[in-house]
Amino acid sequence: MGNISVVRWVALIISILVVPLTLLRGLAAPFLLVLGVVWCVAAATSYLSHHRIDALSLWVSSFSFAMLIGIFFAPLWIAEHKAHTPDDFVKLAEGFASRGQIFANRAKAQACYLKAAEAGSVEAQARLGEALYFGHYGITNRDEGLKWLKLAASNGHQSSLSVIRSIEGN
Image 1 (cartoon, helix red, strand yellow):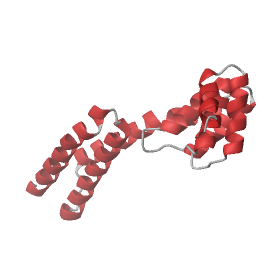
Image 2 (cartoon, helix red, strand yellow):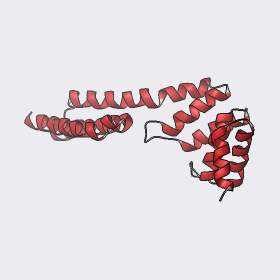
Image 3 (spheres, rainbow, N blue to C red):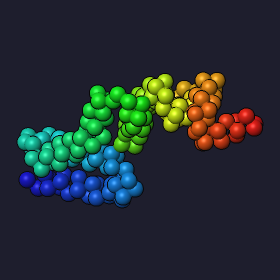
Image 4 (cartoon, rainbow, N blue to C red):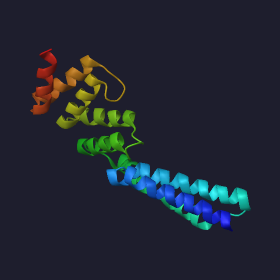
C-alpha cells in the first residue's frame, strides 16, 4: 500500500511543478496532456507493482485526457461538419492553426483558408496569401501568395497592402 502512496505523491509533485510552466502561461493543452500522462504512468506503475489499478490515478488521467479532447478536439470536429459560410471556414482555420498550442493541423488550416478565400472572404485571402508567401504552413509558393495578397488588397484589406508594399519594396 505504501508504494501506491509514493507513486501518487510523485505524480502530484510533478503535476504541481507543471502548473507554472504550462497552465499559468496559457498553455492549457500541454498541461492537460502532461497531467494525463503523469497520472496514467502512476496508474500503470501501481498495476505493475501491486497487480491492481489505483482508481485515483486512473480517474485523474482519464479526466485529463477527456478534458483535452473535449476542449481542443470535439469543438473543431463539430464545427468542421457545420461549416458552410466563408466566415465559418475562417474560424475553423484559426482553430486548426492554433488547436491547443501543440496539436495544430496546419494543412487543414490552409485548406479551410483556401475554401474561404475562394468563396470571397477578404480576411482568408490575406491570411492565405501571407501563409503561402512566407511559408507559414510548410509550403512556400511566393507567386500564389502574392496573388492572394493582391486580391485581398484590391478588396480593401489594408494589412495586405502593407505587406505587398514591403515585399515589392525589396
